[in-house]
Amino acid sequence: MREENKGKGRRAFQNNIYALRLLWKVCPQIVVHGAISRVLGYFEWLFYSAFFMRYVINALETEAELASILTFLAITVVVFAGMSIYNNYVGGRVLPVSMAGVYKKLNLELFEKAGNVELACFEDNEFYNKYTLAADRAAERLVETVNNIWGVIFGVVAAAASFYLMYDVDKISVLFVIFPIIGNFVFNKRLSQIDFDRNKDMAPHQRKIAYVNRVMYLADYAKEVRLTDVFALMKRNYREAIAGVADVTKKYTFRAMINHWLRVMFTFTFIFEGVLIYGAYRSLVTHTMSLAQLAVLTSMMVSTTWILIGFTESLVVSFKNGLFVDNLRTFMEYEAKIPEDSKGEDPGDVIESIEFRGVGFSYKDKRVIHDLSFEIRGGKTYALVGHNGAGKSTIIKLLMRFYDPTEGVILLNGKDIRSYDLQKYRALFATAFQDFQIFSLSVMENVLMRKGSKEEETEVIHALKLAGVYDKIEGLPQGIHTILTKEFAEDGAVLSGGEYQKIVVARAFVQKCPVKIFDEPSSALDPIAEYRLFESILRDGKDKTMLFISHRLSSVQNADWVFMLENGQIIEQGSHGMLMEQKGAYADMYEKQAVNYLALNHESERRGIFAAKEVNR
Image: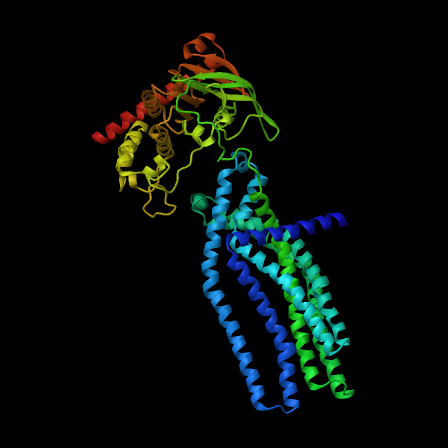
């Protein structure tokens, strides 16, 4: 246990040094001004209690000249006015401007790091939690951490100075300092532990309260809340959670109350009253202490107590911030396995072949791909088909180098894809993913995925037409310049899932790449829209290498070659006709889907006829 605590203490120390170095790199002026402000704060406490009071009272007792007293007071006022002006300048001018710079630079570093780590990091809960915890109020917490470092360092110096000054006035008086030390380091530590235990016990009830709060104000739940009796169930859960919070509070109240009372007594009462009584006895009864010494002693007592409190709080906060710094440090020091800025050979822009040779891949100790070998020839159309979970999307992620195989090798034109410049290699592929995202940007920007020029509008419109969604986009208030979603724009357009999917397919159409990859491009479309979309895809990609991923076999009939996957392995391959003749897994799956598609087509036709009749009326 002792070694473990030493290890934690060493790590906490290293984390604080890391925070200091990082903030110095990002914004050195905040580090400097933070140190100066702490020094001036402690100087003010010590000067007033140890020197100012002693000088004024000694001057009055010795009947010093009024001019010298006024001069001393004037110098003091000027010095402290200057300190006040400096603090106001730092707080009102330097910090707001510098904090904006810290926020910008630190978040840019975090974003750059996040953009450079491999995709697997974002699918790892532990790593992702570290990233989100590191990014949460990163700038404010980094500055707070460094300020607390100065609070600890200069707090030790100020505490030592106050002890010495009290000792210089009266040696016995230093013993009274033991009381606030006990109050802060013993009872305050107990209170922190009680607070930790209480929050831990409250966490399940607080989560339930937070959940009910979300349910009651989010629009996603509004319909169900109004159409059912679920509100009564939520109210029941809320009452149970509130009762749980009350029970936990009662459990810790007595212990917290006793320790809080002891902390106050030791931190304030014993030293304040003790020193005052002791000083009064020495001054009034034994006449062994002057009035000036009594004033300095009582003033030093107050200063010492608050210096110790400030030092203790800085120390406690530094350890609390250690978790944040540890997350930040772990994330920033992480060495990416597939860095986005990986350099290498230029792959060129001609695709002769793509080959998977003995490829295996495991994700979190689960085997996903097994000894996979196949070849794709340039200029041909291929399909990866199979049930959900067969490994189709994982193959594409391996091809795009979001992951690297745990076994085997992937070759492009006969060379390991890891030997190529990563960005130039990925630029060979135009990909429309099944798990796509639509951004709160214009339609044009969502298609190009960058800022477009006036000349590119024609290309975007052509891509949208190929995807079969331009008629819808043309009817929007600002056409292709209409903002999608209402995240930031009140007049933003909200489209259907199928329309969003077509915009994502348009992304692949608009890119001038030798390889086009479509991952379940029609999963949100009806059979007729799907048929039209695949006609466009095949027409647009007739001179390119095409790769489809689909579990709908009707969409891949025209592919030159089909790979049938199951449990991360190829179980059948060939043209559509060849596979149908084999009467294996592919043929069985195709025939079963054909029955459903026929029913869906009949339903679509029926609805079309009905809609036409309604229009004619």
